[in-house]
Image (tube, rainbow, N blue to C red; front, side):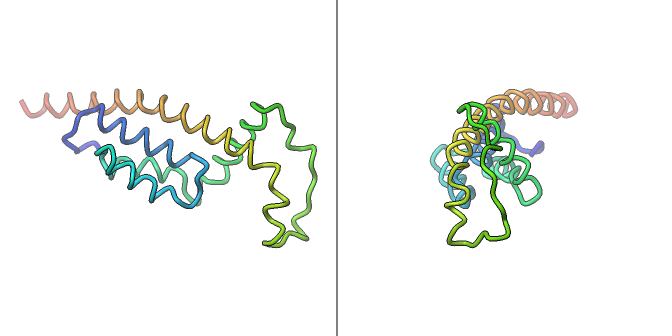
Length: 140
């Protein structure tokens, strides 16, 4: 990412959009959504996809647990009010069993995704700007 010859703004925006898409609640279509946004807004595909894949098999459970908890807190819900057992869980009862988590999941992941994207835009902008300044200085 740091060897790309694009503006720090464009690289940071590409990463921030990727982060938002990676955290957003549209599970299963992150890659397709990212490709559409990359082409629509002419973002850097590699940098955007790097942001998208922050949510991966290793990080998805902690990220979505935190975002669902955050959404519940924002909505004034207590997720511990409802007990359930995984022993009787079947695919046909999955949605019914976890339906109460849908609203906090959507609210929390959208909110955290937006906040993370804005925060990381500024962080990545500064990093890309510093790396490019060093590259220019070393080229002299």
